[in-house]
Image 1 (tube, rainbow, N blue to C red):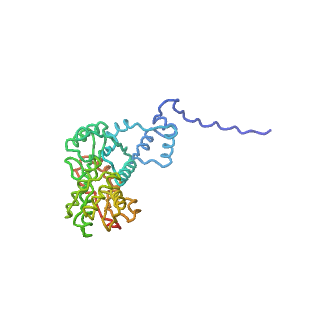
Image 2: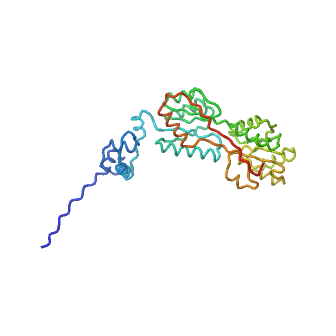
Image 3: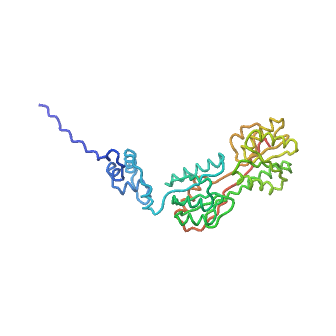
Length: 343
């Protein structure tokens, strides 16, 4: 008679949350076979407790299977502050350079377990904007140009451990990343002067909001020693054709075109009008966009160097950990000319 071995009963699977119920950390702990404390350590990236890699994987797999997401408010209560870094949405159009900088910063902050929130505050300014941002209780704020000492103080009273301003000058009570765009205009002006151009046209965009960058760049060309002629230009072909005609009629033979996009627009209008670049008019832009290298003639430009996203994220993290640190000032904008065929 053949003996059939008895099968061992299957190990019961931990009960899952009832249909429609919100999964909890206790559910994750049961499914992963660990304690709730271990779940908390793993999902909150706690570095003070050593957790083996297989255990971490089990916890993450269980959380993913159950659709569990940690409760941000509860975590904030335990920590005494949120992990929100607030970045107010720029009120002015930003180009690829600044967009890339912001994207890299957001990725770097997320890897440090911060939640980046971009807040639209169009129409708000000064203390009103600070009050709106403070409602989110951010742990850090990257404040734009225009924030004053009262707004800084309000954000700190609401719990912001670090307030960092981005602009041409520091603000009392905040850490400062100085971005003085006069340097961009100054090096462009010096480059054209070295090419023998004493009179320099400077494109001033007509689009609203760009004055915060355009005016310092215009001032920087003046500081280079060049005689400056302001050239208001809207970002359309009709306006570019008018400026091209003005250049050919006035005998102005060199232009700093604010940035590469306006420079490419103006170069096309000059060529359509029968002028040669740089034979009749030398043109230099700024931002060092790839499209400028594809033009013929290739576009001379001012390359703007900003800190990497990782560097700035590490600064934010350090200031959050040390909220009593004395305000720091960092000059973070560097400008160098990349000379090509258009000048």
